[in-house]
Image 1: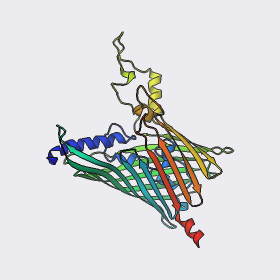
Image 2: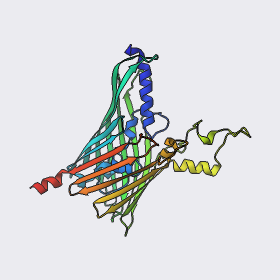
Image 3: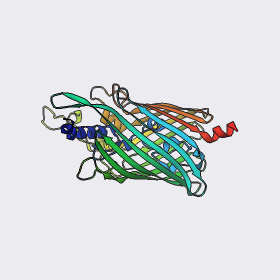
Image 4: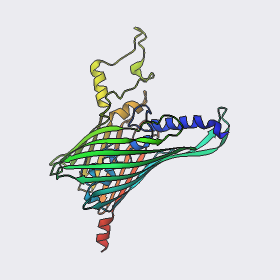
Length: 355
């Protein structure tokens, strides 16, 4: 009986995973969990990459050009929980070698939880699970005091009920940083790869490839950092036709569909690429962070209740060799809003202190 439902299950699960990945269009690619934000700091400032060069290991999963020697012997954990739903995160460790560069190994995971087998009449017959994993090896190296490069290599495995898939991918990135660390900028190409083994016989699915550009600047006399990100350089129009949207309703008098003006349409398409984040640091130990993602707001808000859709917020705390971060993302009104936790421990400082 279970085998009869498998074609429906794989379609259903693939749809869930595609919907849960906010950095791609319409579920047109596989391994969408690679685009999810794991870092609490990244999430609190709007999501996706950050071009902030301050030796934060939690940023290198999306921007490997930030991998540096100062991260040597650092252990980190990112964990994201969604109430009554799935959880995901990663475990990271960094090691530097003087001749070949700096490396960060990451084990990335997402657990979708338990599902119940059911036929079209609603008769149940046991449960099954779904999960995806990626083993990443990141490398970064400084070319000069201002420029650095990096790459992530990814071995990907996905298990949805009895269906399995394997893939390979790489990220490549480059960053520029001023000598005084006031301004930094990055260009990243993510998830360049291939699905080696598909879930079912047939054509292979593409990976969620994306190009991003980001920059960040720290004000000279005020402890404030502003981050600006431009997503999806490879595609201009990120909108989609939602028949239930008020913008697509038919005027009862003229019988014509309501459409945005040329300027309004351009502004809407432009803003869907933009993510803005702000970080205020107090006494070099405590940071307050706020972010805004226009595209997330437009895609996730409810028509009659927009609430704080698209806004994120959080804080960071540094205590000697420990770094703790927390973030809360508001996708829509209700409980579909994840909590992000990040913890990093500099084992090198811990060992020196013990000696």
